[in-house]
Image (cartoon, rainbow, N blue to C red):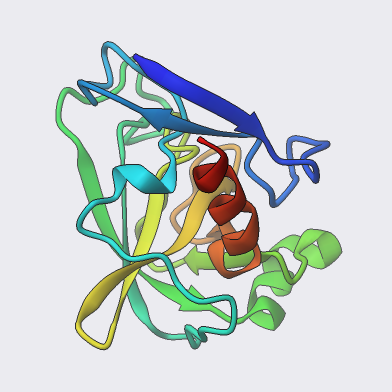
Length: 170
């Protein structure tokens, strides 16, 4: 069951880097029962970065999700999927996606693995000082789930103040 939901004031298009909703989930996180975008409070084993934290290109990170494992699949998997993928600089990401990439986005992948349809809202975590840190939120990518182009994630360092505001209000 969802306790609450808040829409980011910057969300306006499917290619927006801001997540449309942040839902504070309570109870079961079984994806068959609840498909809301998990709020940062769900990530009990993950820390939220500071607004000035830096995660350089090449950092190996992990994303998880319940989305399709191949573009041609008819069904989502029964088990949570996980993939390790490197961060890209925004300049490198623009070589794939052009000027749709903004400072509030972070890209990862183009390395043989990718997020896919159904993974949106899921985490991109990287280790910083030995602690898993939420760096991105799955936003968009290749319409065919290509593993040779990077996925685009909302850059959490750009959302930290909004997240703290929403969590404090709830």
